[in-house]
Length: 619
Image (cartoon, rainbow, N blue to C red; front, side, top):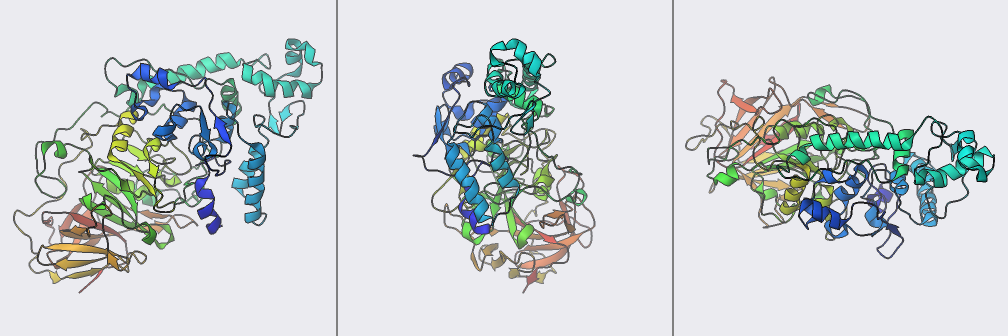
């Protein structure tokens, strides 16, 4: 299964849109429904020829998924390969209902090939694929199994009555099954009414009104400012989509459980889906987008930082830099993924354990606007969000896990994700701005650029300036001169292999410049952009309560606490410390054993979140 996932599943539709398979550009194509909003219409509405800046409020909910995922070169095209379609829709049947076609026989063969590789095990993935083969909108489909009320096992009694429909179509005769067949295969696409109680046109009008209201209230629409055009306010142009939504075709199981507070309060329900680090980060089962999230109070509220001393390093910065929101970028420690692009720009670098005995990194990058390649990028976990929030960043990640639900999609969070944001559901804001390279194999080849981030922020209505009400200028306390930790223990070498046994992170102190140089997997950890080894003036190890949340091994860390200790390393010395964090946007504070806040030296800081019970080794 591991080999198969690496070779095949990484190119399959993300989330529940799992029924397409990888083909080359010359293979079967998917034809775009030309009733969708055209590129020329979008250009006219928004006054821009750059699709990367087009706000999704002007699209139908069905189109939003396409325009969010499609790379720039594909936007507006009438044909996309199946390889492209994997990223366009969260649900195959919505894709097909909306006027797309694909090669039925190849899909059928792939379904059986997958079953063979699974040694005949009919897992959820196989069941989804095989079910989709019965979709009435597939070309080359076999004869559908139809009864008086069901079409391929789906119950249409809520929207269909044979006697009523026969009165509308006397030419079809009185056979109830044949009447239902015609209704599903022809009548639905024409917006016909199948019984006296359900009027699809009235239902569509109500759905469109709800979409319009949500779009008018959305942060992304309000952020466009004065003179903006009215949003389209449509759920879809396809009657089949309205029938599908009403009948529940696009809705599946939803993970339940506590999803707020610190990780220690997270539900211990086993997270749904597959390995979150694979390209199919999730097998999500949500329905159409819910754009009714309340408007963040800070959409038009910008905090003006008066100081030009960096809150991250205490170094001098420009006024523009001081007022730019940082990125919080999820980066891997996997050996095959090294070196990362842009990691040397991290003024703060977190490293925390994840499931499978592997750690991950989150780089807080304030100076990012000129970077052409950032990454590679990996999925997020809930505890990283709590670590990130105190910096009010734009979170850059490639999906996540179910435990993030309720936090990652809350109005205060601004995230850009290469796939569905919490693994088994949510949105994929800015997904079309991510790109893959051929120099590494997936999943180690996903990246984003600064220009892509800026476009995604325009699309999503995110501020790139510090947000009033969220940004906190009081983080670290820096020494006025040099803090050489008088009375501290010697610590020229720091070994974190007991904390991070896979990455074997370690540091070597260089007295000539006063920095700790980081190693990973037994060698220097470098930035692929400049080839330089990353280095830090300060190293903090933060012992943290933790637990295993489920059988998959997902971990939880208590990031809000005031009872735990740790270690502070700087200038070749070490002292024992305690830490405290009291709120999501409150800074983590560090104190020596006498209760005094520690004084960091000017420069960058590494923060290793250690599972309580694991300790660093030094000298």
